[in-house]
Length: 208
Image (cartoon, rainbow, N blue to C red; front, side, top):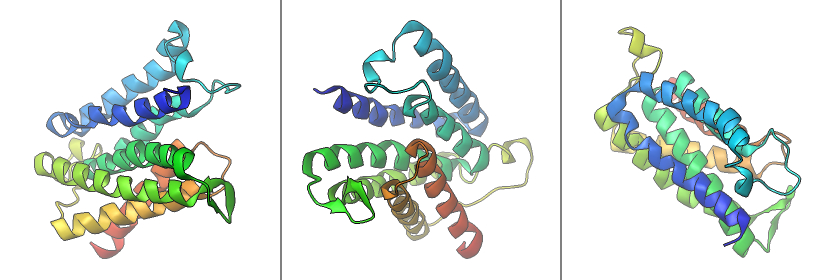
């Protein structure tokens, strides 16, 4: 297994921590995300536990650091079901775009020669079902709750029907796949999360 493949599998597997979140609620989602930020920014660098996942020549400010920051921001700003769906897009789509792109990415995108059609397709094809599964699973146990709403009776959103949830997940995955394919000089953990979360929030605000 190459170091890059190992890094992507870790990136992917961390989404497993999203499974207990609906039972804990939005407050604990934020608390646990803060713990993850502290671990990735302080504990792991000091202990050297992240060394095997670092790319050659990579600076301290990298995807390993920004991953939990992205999850934290999603949980702060979005209803929990949408935050979970966004996490699914980030963890699954971003990982498989890398894995598919390195394995099958011979045909490059015309607007970004560092990315491939295979990688973008791999992103969308895996991020969409992951987002949908987490959205439906979360709203089954914590419908509509958000971190801000947890402190009051207001600010609830959803729950959404299966058709509405499917539309939300697809739009979020599609926009994130497009954003991931663009030649943006910002860590894609942040841009992908922002793209997916903003797209789904916009659909809710405008259509639902």
